[in-house]
Amino acid sequence: MSSFLMFFQQAAAPAVGAAPAGDGGMGALLANLMLPIGMIVIFYFLLIRPQNNRMKKHKAMLAGMKKGDTVVTQGGIIGRIFALKDDEVVIDTGEGGKLRIVRGMIVDVKNPSAPAAANDSKGS
Image (cartoon, rainbow, N blue to C red; front, side, top):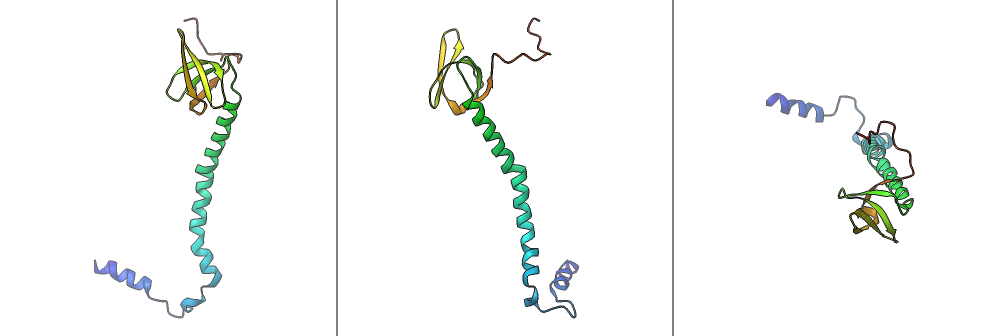
């Protein structure tokens, strides 16, 4: 344990011939700010920017909905759009069941006019 304390005492002691503590100037300030600035840049490119892109795509998807599209809600309910209002959507879940949901709770919109994928096997 004493060697551990001795290491920190030597690290804290000024080196022989070193400049006084007040001469750090702008270089010391930039060196101290590099880590926080670097972390902010990393967070921007790894977290903030992708989230903004996802939000833009989701808003565009919600704006492009039309009557007859098949939608999937956040709760996992699948239905066809029966009516659209400003902030609500009425979906027909089949067998005469209709649900009113908030437009923002729609996760996916499947357009019935879009071609089906080549690997779909609906017949089996």
